[in-house]
Image (cartoon, rainbow, N blue to C red; front, side, top):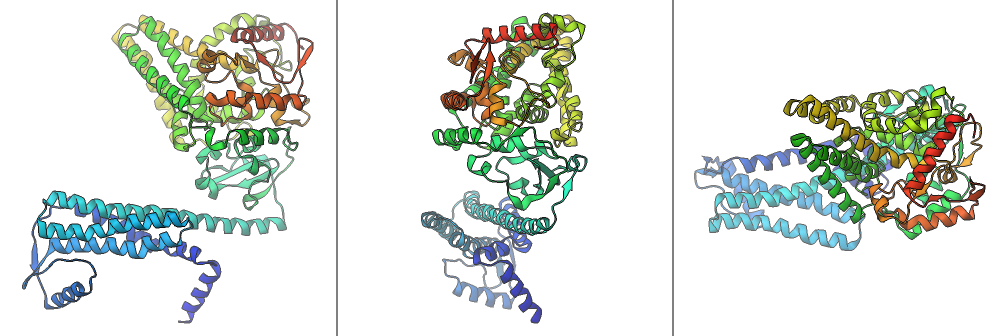
Length: 630
């Protein structure tokens, strides 16, 4: 008895209000186990044949059933005769009692105690009460009116099953709430311990914590253990893309302005990075002010879910699958051109937004949109890390931007890169290299996975399953687009059309990205001259737009012609980027961001057309190929 008092006292101290106590009770494993058993019972009851089975009735059972029938407040039916019990009626009564008990013990308390408004509670009580009263009435109807057995069984099952599902959903929600409460309490305790002694960790230690079961991230110079927070993150598993690495830029660019004004949740902070080197500044109000104004102009819930984007996605995906079928079955020049074109359109219009979580506010739908890249036989998991972390976080930064690593030594794109003799011809042979971009992108998947561990700020989680799936994707790509056409037609035809398909795909994909950053007008930085540049200003200085007034180029490029807007707001659907152009232009002018362009200065640069941007790209390659410095 004394132990019970102590346990009760501890429970009262731990859960200071009735809501927390309620969560604890209803999330208990015994209570949850009851739900699982009840759910299995209802499913079995649906499957077993309802035949009349009689079992002998003991005298004590007769007394119990008689007392139960007199106390039961709802209409009932006979479950026994003078000598026998009817098994079917007993099962139906058990079903009825279980549902009503669920209502009385579980659903009603949840409705009353859950932190929702009065209207929500009233509506739920009315709906669930109607469902609950329908069950005994339906059972009586079966007994009195003799409805068909199958009809009656499905009716009763549907009502009871709905009850069980509702209970299960609410119980899961309670369990998550309690789990989050417990995690918060543990993290607060950990934070109190950390305040007593701030630990420092080297990058060699940090990069080891890169899995769902052990996930650390770095924001500025602080380390956060977000392992327990992963399942509650509104962005889903996006955190895993930066597990064990520096997520500072992603924290500022993907989260609301009211959050970025503050420090990340301090209950998850476990220490600091030893000898942390921060290249960019996030302290002035330039980027913060832009975010606040854009959020005021277009609420964050409207950044995604644009009907135009959904329509484009449907058309591009349908066109790609249709062209793939056309190519595999006919393997003509037209089929190869169309397949390459629609594959690139699916990439820039669906995949790109999906992997930036800009396609939909539903994280699952955006996740699936990102996987369209796997449908075109590349890999979304690599793209998210090498593009989101290795490019967006550090655009045109020589030592950090992944684009410089993947193109050198074939192409020289930065003045500080070593210049070889053949670079003076790069403005000519670049068009041949662009022909093979799709092939190198698809087959470079495994090199990219290896790259994750080469630099501490670019670490991410890749499971063995993802590696295995990528092997399957590549085998399917070779089999569907090359081997099968070779068998069905001839290897000469298949290889020729395969080359055309890859070339068209490559050009439609690569050129849009090239003219956004590799032009004379786009700036470049390195470790020596970065000098704590504001991260938001860097996105404007090192990017350039093109053909902003062109409906055709906006949709063909998947909104990549609004590159400045996209880099500042990667979570914005590309079909809506034009709505924030004027805001960014005004802010850039007010901040006096300068770019030297043909002896005059601009705060926000855009090419009049795609051709102008392409010519500037050509000129940059020619200059960098012939001069050590520009």
